[in-house]
Image 1 (cartoon, helix red, strand yellow):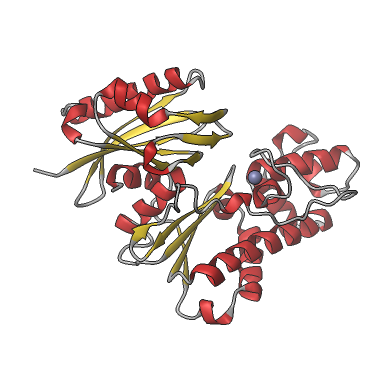
Image 2: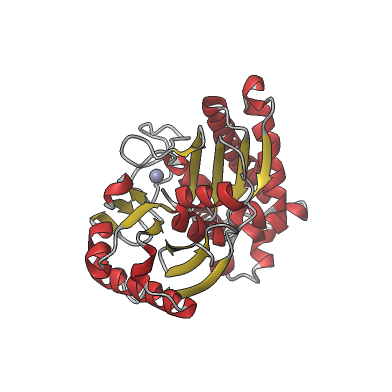
Length: 320
Ligand SMILES: [Zn+2]
């Protein structure tokens, strides 16, 4: 009989629970449930219900897993289960692990969602068999998951790898610096995440910037996304070119600095902005090559994420 584990991926809009075969990484049963509110007790109820549904679909009891793993889109205080800051959930200092354990009567391991995704990619995806890995995710947010010496690297208190909140624009009096969802200014995420790119383009079009983007969305700036900017770039639009050069320089430079600092054997790129914007991805890789230390670049391979949205639940299920 297969050895089973259960993982949960908790984002800002959905909780997804999955029963995973520990030996193959296959998802045997899964249940996804939208969050009705983001109030912690209500989210705990939703997560517990998703777990129950996934376990029922597999014909096992939730208690039979021993320990469950949950990847949360936010900054998590390591294995204590405290979520320090989760902008998409509107949470600050929520004792999520404790609340969920009390609800389920089962031990729960909480980690950042990208740490969980990196662990999943290491077990069954693009980092299989590799001990030093940086997974870089650029989607609605920006972040990373790190595996160093074969172990998940969460730092002293669980918040290592917060790539999106490294400062890439100095905040000086008299300069306009973009504010980030974390509350600080000048973060990489404020310049390169899908949500922030869309917000900036909307602002600039409303402020009179001339771009093909306006025509591509039929004049409805609410439809602006990073992939529309990518299309405008491909059609030779000057505005899109200038924006993509700036974003690629920041993103490629940040990834290069991660590689220069940590010397991983593999970088895994994932997230809708990287995977859905081929022009931006190519420019970012070119900037990465320009900025990375040549010694750290030797022997490094760059791959796309294999497991997609499944990496988080698979990794959460297998967390140690
Ligand atoms: Zn930030």
